Image (cartoon, rainbow, N blue to C red; front, side):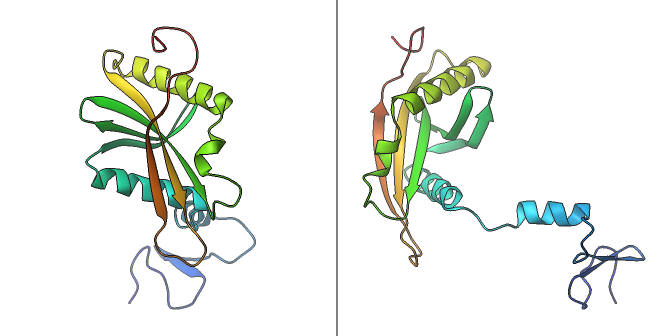
Length: 166
């Protein structure tokens, strides 16, 4: 017997209360949209960010945010290492044939990360704490279960002018 919200033995149908909803019909259902958002395959970048977060946790970092978005941009990982707030940019590639992944963090990207970091520190009252920018390179070839990870501590200094940049 199937209760409310159970998947029926008929593939593609979902029981909701006493109504049967056809999830394979061309008419979009909110449940289908929700399921596809949460259960879609992860992109290479998302897999790399999760692998980097696990790696940093093993090193003793406390992960505060993954993929933190705000007006000034996105920071892949915001973590705490001791008393230091660490802003981590993760670069994931299938191979290193076109150069190291960290080379993609150019001056423009460093400026965007700096502005996003400053906004985060200001909004959370953390301007008195030390902060730094790290880059984690993740190389994840096709068919391998585990990536190779390289962590570049203090990869670049803050770019720009103002109180964070001195």
